[in-house]
Image (cartoon, rainbow, N blue to C red; front, side, top):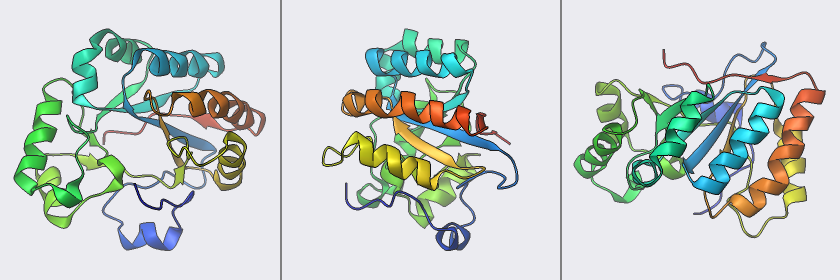
Length: 208
């Protein structure tokens, strides 16, 4: 997947300000997001952990996973969370034609009703972004990565980085996938406790 920094620097997000990177820095709220689901074990675990603290989150769903697990997808929304489009096959915009990419997003939209879109891997091109915006999508990136997808990292290092990098308005990426589930189980409960103890609440990303 390449190198991904734990925190996106402000100068970088300002350089690409047409994308949504974070919320209000004056507001004591964060935006928890979960990519690549829904999957039975991982997504259900996430929903239980969020419910313990009455936290809300935004789930960027792969269309293929929604087709395989429609009841889990419904459960996400029944628990008061928001969903977003993450393409049907988790495509990489850097090596996919604009037309193929947008068609794949449309395919996902047949199952995921949302104008929020997160590009898989965070990879996007100007042409693809323009096409997405013409379709009415709000492109959501992030400013903090949990690192749960990286098999070469320990859960302690991920948790330490999360605590260090979280700020008011942060959009934080986790993954409710089979691949990340082992790491997620070690990181998420402690991180949610950290947020609660330090006075943060969470909210879903606005579609406006």
